[in-house]
Length: 339
Length: 214
Ligand SMILES: Nc1ncnc2c1ncn2[C@@H]1O[C@H](COP(=O)(O)OP(=O)(O)O)[C@@H](O)[C@H]1O
Ligand SMILES: [Mg+2]
Image 1 (cartoon, rainbow over the protein chains, first blue to last red):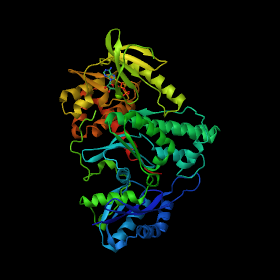
Image 2: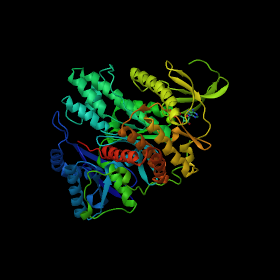
Image 3: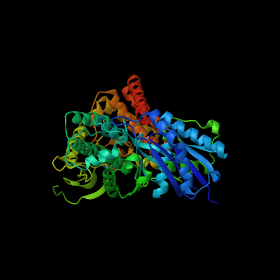
């Protein structure tokens, strides 16, 4: 019998609610995105206010679009973290309310695990190297010994933060990724910027400082965007290539908000060809934060026997994804050498 | 590239193609840094040139610190390739994955890392696929990301990379394998200096992983 699961996402800009079925169909995925004022970053309390104002209509639409009666859902998932405290708390309150009203259990979900698991569902990835690129994360991971484990990551800021902080310096409002991508597409003038790959890890802070400096010196915005993207994406691509060579995985799954960037995808595709791996980007409408990642992961946890009481449904602003046990994945011999 | 007789592609590395060929009558490795089509051309050229020269320089330098590394036969900066000694043995990665490594090998790897750091060499990419186990000795390869530094921060970054690889690719042997390495490292660098590196390593770990949205 098909079961239905609802997922509430509210870690940062996005408030979203989604209904999925136990057979892995995303029946609805409704979002409302908070936009910061120009030249500013996300303001946690204003974002939380936005989420409070939109929560009810987003949740109701997600049931309506899915044509699922709220009382038939088996469990309610919500993003417990990592993310911004005030935003997370809105999601937790909404989820607790639903749980009490419908008398159904709650399933706290790690937001980053959600990105990966939804990516696996939608692309059919079985045992991928995962590149997670978003506002909060820049990581390369693989599954081994019951967890998603980090093979490479940023040593300072994330790719999303790099783009946002540069964009804000230039007077844009975050998230700035798509505006920077658009501006970059109008230039082909490469200005040398610091390139820092350390093994499978990257470091973006030097690049950010230099890009801001170029802006202050009056270089053309489009040229800086182009050079910033070329440099940062090549760094990510190289770290990914190194991780592919090291792990010898035959699939590359790309998830997270920045996964939608066409230039980055293009670079990653080339790498996959060189290493004989299939390139599996998550479809753009699911790359950014959304309820579906939470609903689907809630289903996975729930069927593995995990749920909590409304009183235990708290939030965790900092929560490493490699501390989460993943009981639904198994590997007969995870350390088998494929090389 | 100059023609040196038959070359056979044996590995697609992280950034280079590795061929087995001959040099002056003996087997040799040709490490060729080809242009990566996804990278901006001028950036790509600069990186390949810098790393080829860097690799040859450091590969020579570590020998005087008592670290086994391939002998360099020829360097072509223009075409960004290096011809070097072929080291017969198995990669530490493969041995660990197959479960056949004595603990002493990991302690020795720690000592080798200690010797490099004592000579102010930061390897920059000390994954288990860049360590070749030759009967009982360890040889270190792949010095493209290496550099010279006396900073504790850089040594900690170097050590953190080994830890990251061990905790992900060799998760079932972790943390034991890393502890063995640290014990060898301490033997060479001394307790006090190792302690400083370990403290800095924890500081670095706290920095990246908890990156928050802002
Ligand atoms: N001198 C050498 N002797 C034996 N094998 C080598 C040698 N150099 C490279 N290899 C093999 O080729 C692989 C990739 O070489 P490496 O120098 O690490 O290139 P990359 O920078 O692309 O990782 C190594 O993991 C090793 O298996
Ligand atoms: Mg290598």
